[in-house]
Image 1 (tube, rainbow, N blue to C red):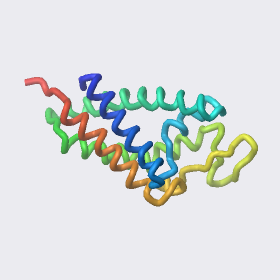
Image 2 (cartoon, rainbow, N blue to C red; image 1 turned 90 degrees about the vertical axis):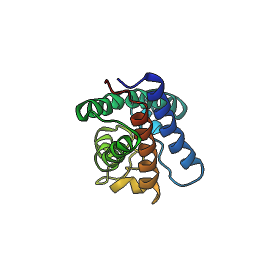
Image 3 (tube, rainbow, N blue to C red; image 1 turned 60 degrees about the vertical axis):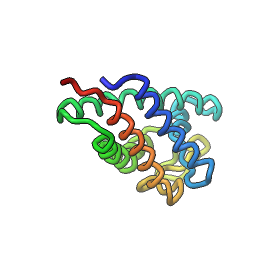
Length: 156
């Protein structure tokens, strides 16, 4: 099992990377906001819920990383970063599409916005949130994986 402190650190770095990138104007995506608006239409409340949910998801994904490290009997920053790359590609190609499919406040790519569905769908590789979005998501997930891989204690 990956130490909880390392999992929280990795998820914090991922979230801060994404938030800072949004603040610098490199992307418009906010994963906590997108997740939180599934549960609430109130923006500030949705962001708060989304941050808690994003951390829970980060902890849950760390178990998947640990399973791979255990199965391969190898860990380290490079392997973790490689898994982070796969994880980030999954988020960009499938994860956000699944979120868009059931999100109650997100327009679909086939049907435009309505009074209830006002959030823009992510589009291919989440590029509707900016052309740099795929790079930002991948860098954040590379860092997440590298931290988890470096912190994973393999049994002797």
